[in-house]
Amino acid sequence: MKKNMGVADSVIRMLIAVVILSLYLVGIINGTLALILLAVAIIFILTGLIGFCPLYLLLGISTRKKK
Image (tube, rainbow, N blue to C red; front, side, top):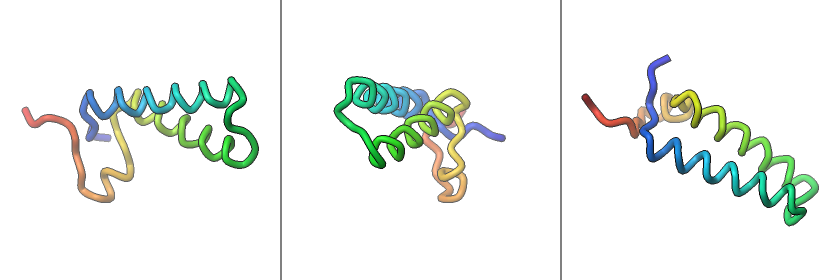
């Protein structure tokens, strides 16, 4: 699995995930919307940590800098 995400992309995904988790814990979002957004947050955390996004692979996108 070749990394296809740059540092900025990973950081942005992690920040979005933290915001979603915070909104859930405070009680601003709930119900079905909360479950969907929590799933998105988990995906963002995982892809941010490993530096690979399967959707980017399908679309032929890479935000990682060329060496």
